[in-house]
Length: 158
Image 1 (tube, helix red, strand yellow):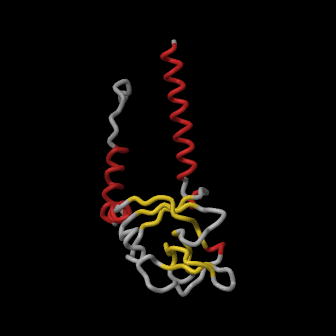
Image 2 (image 1 turned 60 degrees about the horizontal axis):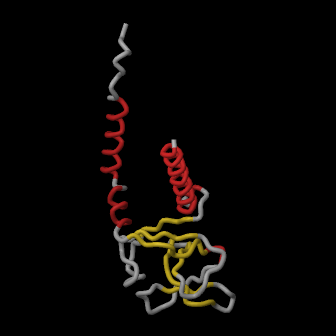
């Protein structure tokens, strides 16, 4: 009886841990606070590398020195470090590998989040999986598994 209670308590604790982890990691596109970014350039070398997957989380305050993700109106997502503020209070950003500041200075609303974690080379691997050939193969394999499921032995055709 005690083992059963321990097992249930263990399962409940694991479920709570997974739920908390899921809420923390829930993607922003699905209503969460986490952005997943695949780095496509060398501007943040030597700390971040081409092909890394970077996790960025929304925050209420952003400070100089923090690596953040922002939306540039013409080129899209940019992952750079806050270097300071301009006269209008907008952020001045710079890539770690750049000797110049970004010409565009985003506002607080345009900053999408601050760096949380980096997974080396995972972005590069995910990018290779997103090719049309791999997607087609996954669709075919899924169809094979769905349509060739074994019938129950009790079910017989009349």
